[in-house]
Image (tube, rainbow, N blue to C red; front, side, top):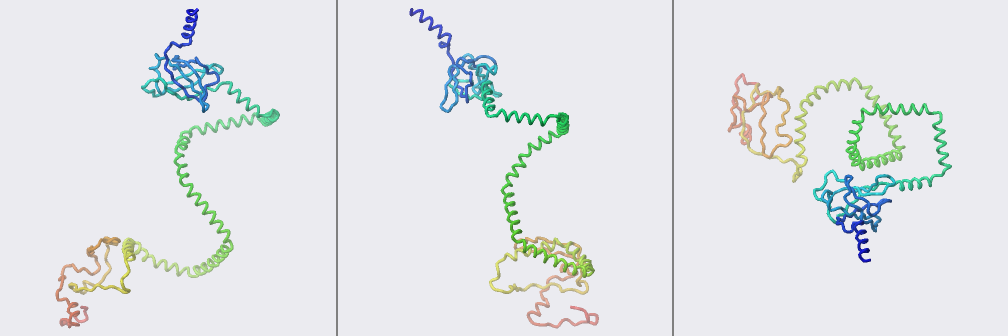
Length: 381
């Protein structure tokens, strides 16, 4: 009797695979499926590599599916394998499908590894359940009324409906060549939308300010009307004044043309000169009101000669700014020689005079000049 019982138990254990070694692996899935039972097959690329040993429910409502992987197939299953729970038909039992990823890991699956299921095939039972739930909420009389209204709407309008479909088809055919441009616009629209999103607070602030301005205009409507009436009166007076003096104003504008042309020609020099005066505005004030004069003795130079040093306007070099408007400290700008009748360095001048008449007159008072001959009478100097 013991021998018979032992033979039966051994045969049952061999049938269940109790004496076969396996690699335990656990799959965590949102659900196991309606027809997922122990002993379900585990396949990869259509080849069975193991079976389902048990199914447990986790406290968070997920399902833990325990797999028994054949040790001889362990080396062909990468550790980052993808798990799908599917069935051959919509009514068939579920099985585990192991799908190798595009970039399989060099390491093989190991004992105790936990995998996540990516997809569970929807059973026809679930579809029927959801369809039944939808139909249970639809009232038959309202559904019949809706279908009747649709039938009445389409009744006798088959030709127009067909024409609409034909026009829509032509529209799509016309739109098809522009699809690449449309795709490009959609792709780059994210940048534009991000710019609008960044500017949205400023736009909202501007809209809020615009609302306040419009409200102020409404509140000051009477004053605005009075201002417009005053503006109309001023415009009438100005029209009378300008119309009466039109010819005189025209003549003044014509007379100002040479002056404006000259100012435009020298706009660079005028600009840098005015900009050079800006630092003077930023200097600290004088300790006492008045003008500070720095007096010192300077060596005299040759006096002006007549007629070679008579003033004249013949310079043609245009405006010269040199270092203006930012002149470096202790910088002495060079003397620009132009044809204006004054050139202290021209040929014939004696240069520095130690016995300058100006110095002698400043020290000793007025001094009689040299005697003049008949040709010098009436000449300056």
